[in-house]
Image 1 (spheres, helix red, strand yellow):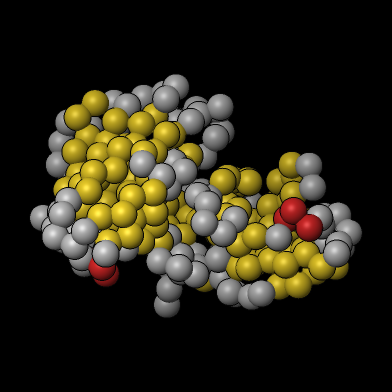
Image 2 (cartoon, one colour):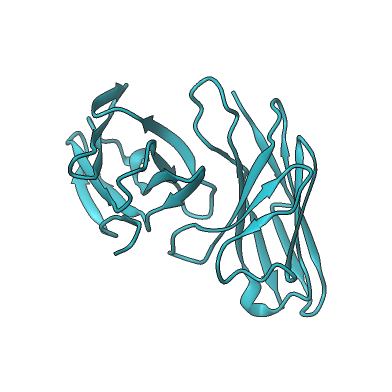
Amino acid sequence: QKEVEQNSGPLSVPEGAIASLNCTYSDRGSQSFFWYRQYSGKSPELIMFIYSNGDKEDGRFTAQLNKASQYVSLLIRDSQPSDSATYLCAVNKDDKIIFGKGTRLHILP
Amino acid sequence: GAVVSQHPSRVICKSGTSVKIECRSLDFQATTMFWYRQFPKKSLMLMATSNEGSKATYEQGVEKDKFLINHASLTLSTLTVTSAHPEDSSFYICSAFPGTGGHGYTFGSGTRLTVV
């Protein structure tokens, strides 16, 4: 089992709709979880991080964490074409950040 | 916010030569930095953890003699790709954790290495 798993996509979402990105992780001892956005040819940029079970909201973004199910998600409300990118889920394991393969998100104008 | 500066952004070198990539934390001290590589349409793969004042910790399968890491100060880590070959062509990215302010791990802008 891979340490961090994501559906590679592409996930196509109409502009203005909610985009839902999902991630599962294998290590129950993981304590912190991150969502990064990466545009083609660019370095990842942090969108959100979450440590506690439940939801965390920041603007149009909501991160959801369920440690019992080892599941992390990212919701993007009112999706914009500029949200089209690859979204990387990352988990802090032993003070190292381990990334999933990323989900390509395409917002349809 | 916390900024990590990485240079060069692009480099083309001949096969057999060495290339040095620098990663600097501009407004914070980083006792630990991380080096990743990313092949096209693939995920970031952690190569090594760079520790200030001590030897780097390499991930399984990463040749330490080929990818030399030096972390001589709290704001600078370097990755040297020695005797580069075309298969070393990749996107190399460094990262550091500012530790405060909830910034998460901050990434450098990456270095696109092409070995010809």
